[in-house]
Image 1 (cartoon, rainbow, N blue to C red):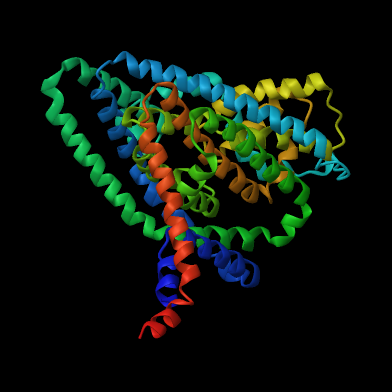
Image 2 (image 1 turned 90 degrees about the vertical axis):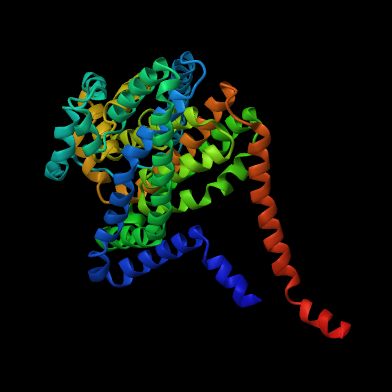
Length: 446
């Protein structure tokens, strides 16, 4: 019985991913020469997922909107989603600003800006000049639909999908066969996702092994206060802010976190929310959220609702100022917050989006040297895990909140799914507790 219990536990995806993360840390620390060569394992897994994102988002949005009874519902959902995103992002930025001022993780480092070599961040600073708000809005409309799909550009794909869905809805019942075909295609894509997810533990192993081998455990000690501050702030935001949102929706945050535990561990191991976007769409629909809301809110939230990134941006900007002994008045810090409300959106879709947004913010203020980004290079990958997990949870809660606001979630189904997950855990624990005395009871009955 114990063997079967162990096999059952090891067959769970989140357990396999956790083993992959631990193994990656050990290999990266004790065998760094091998660990530094494991990066392709993580990259291949991310590529496998990314190749599926554009077709899945396209089919989800088109099928969902085309089957709406009222086409105005799509516009209403979009407005409510953007409003929620802005409120959540502002709260995240504000909480990060308060915590970094209380904990002061950069104080005492006494870094001289004149002695910093900024060559290592030239890629990010160059990108920062090319991704302002105007560039962001221009990027929503693709030069070519085919190009948007080929490059995996999320917002242009969503934009084209919404236009096509509206056109199909206006054409009426005669488009039903095409919509049904897209729905079948979507189910096939989800089937591919289930196959690809078998590689998740390997991807998590490769990502962690490379990170620890390249930057070393010592990096964590050097920037321990900043890491502790960011992780603590992320937990505070999830528990207090997202917990309050879930209570307003009539659901338990804790049960929801346990429901998406596989996705949380995969995101932590790969530092990528994209790796679990298809799985999150499946789970939120299973939870009772309507397909149109999930198809519109969740992918769009990846650009507009990066709660973890917002926390990181304010903390990182003030951390650099503290490390360089640069005094910022309350008005200076409020200016940082205001600029970040814009730049955090303007860098969406760019590789190293957090760094690009931070570089754009510092460059626009001209009070904190952009070269200070060098201080974060070594530890950024470890910080990225916290903000990625926070982004994931934040977008899941956002989808539920908008669905509840729109009355597009079956609350009976949602509670049943979350409670069933809890009951299954309870039954597993009960079985484990009663395994030992069972043979004795059987022998007595004989």
